[in-house]
Image (tube, rainbow over all chains, first blue to last red; front, side):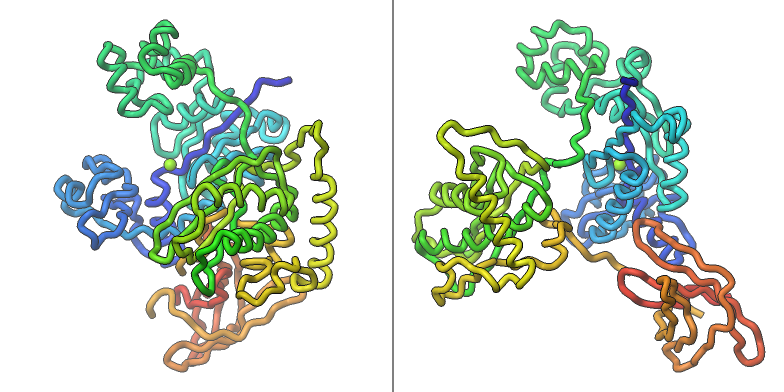
Length: 426
Length: 83
Ligand SMILES: [Mg+2]
């Protein structure tokens, strides 16, 4: 098999670029925020607003991401501040990821403005990896109006480290034979996953560059930083994961919640609400052909106190009944009735397609459950959600039999991750 | 003329999905008939989709050129710029 080639594609000053691009191309602004000392700020009016992204001219004046607005203003009095517009950023991010997915078959979104792209098999299609990266960078700029950095290497770690080299609008390689020259001279704090605490401890023993860390004895790094020490020692030596996690980003899941018509105080009521939530969550998992490994129950009390509890599923599942049983276990561990609840939610995470189930020695009811769910899904698809419901929901207590319901898109597989914004401004 | 003014539009949707502006009304009541579309373009800058129409119209015996935009997500038309 050919050597793996991974790109790390990272939008330069993402929020600021997207804002600038939107204002120029869609609102017709003459000036481009990217050419001026400017920044996107979280909540300009609040005293504690901070800088979320800054332009290159602002960066040259010393403005830093994460610092309070007043501090940035002191360094750069003519700083132009614009409020954050998350709806726009979600739209821009989606289109960016969609373009990458159109470009190559395996894409792992790493954050709102970064993704890994496996282009191993694309040499025939796009040519030499570095030239092809330049073309991809130009295509993103031409079609979507913003610049990116692309790091090129044989694993994700090195590709990401390459992407962090000089910005903006650049392609860098960082292959294993180049790490001595390009990565080892860098300050140790710039190594992926070395936070301020690890950096401080390394500096205390005189380790200030990535190269010094790479050349340390592993046992010494482990003594100093434990298991995490072993990870960063491997990273410093250019070793990191190759496989892309395109299918199941860890934060994605299938969830649903419901605010009750009246607060509930008894466990049996809680279990019933969970069942109605599991009906919809299970149906959505099945529609997408996904199985999950973890069930989380979220509760909100009548006085708006929120908490949640997770429980693993013994086997990856999409069966309504199994999800419900796990949800009930989670509920039992966090609430035994009493405190009035106004909202409950269930989500299934760690999902993947075709997650295999192990054969159980003690007999597995899953096959039966799967056939039952399939029949139920089929009837509801054909005759509507109301066509079939569990008898427990016939009782008139205001609990719907499928909380939240299944919109048509959801049933046909377009399921949205939790907490996503939909709107963007014109 | 101000940039990016919302307008009321009568447009034609062709069977193949193409959309063509025919006649529009400005906020002050002026009605303009589009006499010609010279060029159309798709804009996806910052992930926001708009269809751009570079058009002409006869107004008071004079030919004017201008750009109309259809904002796909919000289903609105704007007069983006008039030259
Ligand atoms: Mg970025």
